[in-house]
Image 1 (cartoon, protein in one colour):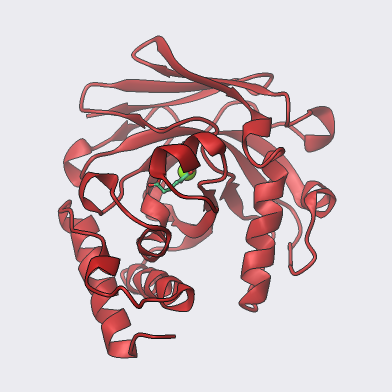
Image 2 (cartoon, protein in one colour):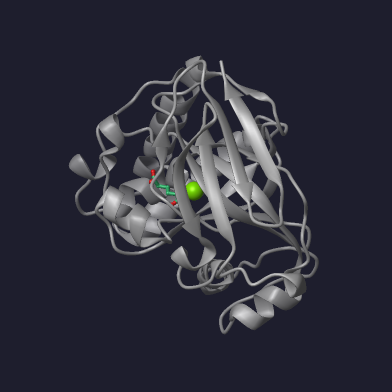
Length: 262
Ligand code: OOG
Ligand code: MG
């Protein structure tokens, strides 16, 4: 760790305030270029602590920057991990208030729900599939607190990987009944298909993102509890949205989920 606890707490307060007030900020590595990975995850943990102190509950985790489309769009080369709290959740078909966000974008994802604990190191795709209760379509609404979505990996980790809102819905599917590599996804904005892909866009197999997450948490002495919801990462580039937009994600054999921006 390169930063003092005081600096970590003050960066967490700053990013948390930006999210609550829908204000953007330059990326924090501009002022703290020596920040290391442990510092970045420590800032993320401190933001989580602030949210939990306000009454939020952890519901799961997310992997991000797991597809080449996303890595290319953001100019980075490795996945990152964050957490999900209940206050991010939008009901299927529900409304998401744009005024509470800075510059939201949507991502088509496959969400996993676990039935047993997953623990790294040594976690692999087969262990993830064995621990998965079902998969279900999920739209993640990301909203980087950084100006113009301009960040490096450490800044985005500190910012809980741009997590803001999510919706899941459609037909839950048991993983033994589906090849998640070839499953097709269509993201529609206002009835117009705007992004398409297949599951293999995420690290060759979306379950690989969950295994990476378990191994990442394992290195920190943490695990993924049974009953967790995990977003495996955007299959395509993220799509910007504005008030008035309706977004639907259709996933092969898994129905659809949607949300409205107001
Ligand atoms: C970082 C979060 C990326 C995903 O699914 O790739 C992410 C960002 O692009 O702002 O959630
Ligand atoms: Mg995402």
